[in-house]
Image (cartoon, rainbow, N blue to C red; front, side, top):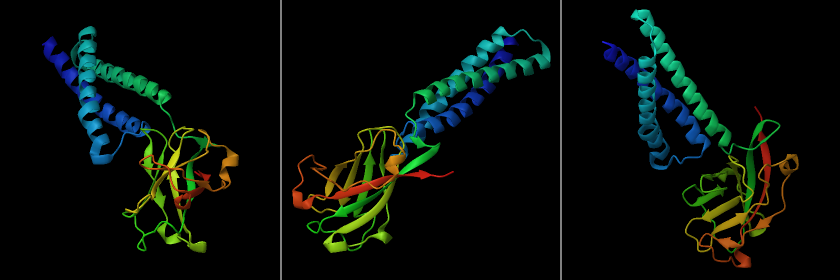
Length: 242
C-alpha cells in the first residue's frame, strides 16, 4: 500500500514536472537563441526537456513520498502538495541560474532595441527589378547562436544617382562587439557581402543617430570585394518603446 501511494504521488509529480519543464524550456530556448529552423527548438523542448522533467518529477515524488509520514487521505494530499512544491522550487532554481547566465538583449532606459539600417548597392551590382525576400536577403550575425534574418522594406526602396537604397531592421538580441550584416542580392556574383558594424556590445544613447556609410570588404566566401562592387550600410539603434 505504501508503495502504491508513493508511486501515485511520483506519477502525478512527474506530470507536473513535465509541464514545468516545457514551460521553462520554451522560454529558455528562446533566450539562448536555439534555432526554430526545421522545428529544432520545438523538438528540443518536447524530446529533451519534457522527458527530463518527467524523470526529475518522478524522482522527487518518490523521495518525498517515502520520507513523509502523514497518514490517511489528508496526508496523501499534503505529501502530494509538498512534492509538487519541491519540484516547482527546483525548476525555479535551475531556470533562474540559466536566466542569470544567459546573454540577454541589450537595453536603453529599460527598452529593447532594434537596428535600423540602409543598404546602399552600387550600380555595378544588378538589383532584381521584382524585389522580394527570395532574391534580396539580409541577416544580422552576432554569434553562432545569434544569427537572425533582417526585415527589408521593399516598398521604401529608392534609386538615387544609380545606387539602390534598401532600408531594413533587425532585432538586437545579445551583447556582441562583433556584429556583421550579410547582404545578398539574388545569384549576382559578388553580391553576398559581409559588412562589419562598429556598434558596441551594449549600445548607448549616442548610437541612436545615423552612422557614416560603412563599406563591405569581404564576400560571403571570405574573398575580398572589388572597390567598385562594395555594398555600403549606415545604421542607427532605435528603442522599442513599451
